[in-house]
Length: 278
Length: 278
Image: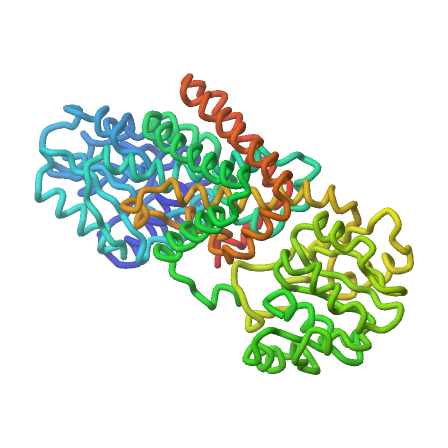
């Protein structure tokens, strides 16, 4: 349980969805914090112990260890249990779990699009889920009842649920999340050290995601290699488009590029005049 | 007077620095708002009228119109007056004003690194300046007394003042501001429309600056063409570095790239655990 696992536990407990929310972490001290912030009812020494008799198991580890953790936990869950995860890449996880679930246990992937560059269960915050999007990624042969249960689980935590195939998820996330993260890191890499002190609030926001855990993001990029490469090529191509217009002094073209980007953003994130007051 | 001009007027009035803060805007309705939010004492129908008898004139128009506006206002200011601006590009302005100031009036450029993607004097907020950086860009032959007065002016408004040549300013700002802005726009341009609804809070922050006024930024890019092109090439090169490592499955290299970026950012913007609570 880190930030996201803790947040899910907290939201489930706040809404009284389960008789008993059990949690495991690799460090004892983290488990104490999870208990203290109200993210769990029962601290467990191992993932197997946490999964014991569970109706729903939510694996919230870094992407690279999700498949093994699901395989470890599934046999201990209740018959008919649903196993899910919160990983930012879905195709790789689905592929590794193909045929690995014990009888009557079902795995369906989830990706709650909620989080923060902060880490740790101490930052657990049920508000992170409210109104946010959760993508679930059933396979072609997923049990319909299990899909419905998973959808209801996330909705009960306050999320808007979308369902799509794992590979479609990975294509979309490469472009709206993984590559923007790499772009933020590249923006920083391109700034000479001596110029950094003159970065203002714009640069701070533009690069916020780049403060995220490098190990976690390295895992995500590895697990989504091909899609990330394609989305990165799209970004490189757009940078060449704007570079070409500046080189040719095509200021009308520069204006158009900036206008289209501003409109695209406004459509997704309508302006909130109150933001400025913060 | 827009957001920044209004903010400067508001901060000057709040701190009681001048007997009379006069302001002009192209629209009468904006002038009414400036008066209402307390950004000015005296609304003026024209820039010449606002500059009349002034000890300090602050031109806060888009970059492309700053030189002409300084030339229009300077003759009306008090003898010995200091003319400055708030433009994001300094070399072009300095070059255009070379030998254009009337006797006893001095122009020295300023760039307060404070702002918002919001526009309009209605968002004027003295807090935007507090503790923020202001770069002033005296020429080699600038009057030392005038440089000192300008420095004290911004300090009195709560800003930390740095002094450097105009061209050095433009090189630095291309890398910490102008190119990060273009990168945010390119990130948006590279996202397929169908994927946009799945952008979450990370994408929102990464692209916040791209919501800025396209005309204003087109002007900045035009005025700083060469420096922007160089900084854009640095960014494109870094994107190729990370792309190469992903292509070669050099995950250790990817991890290093992400770690260096995270550390560079942390050094400039130390983590604030309370941010998460907002």
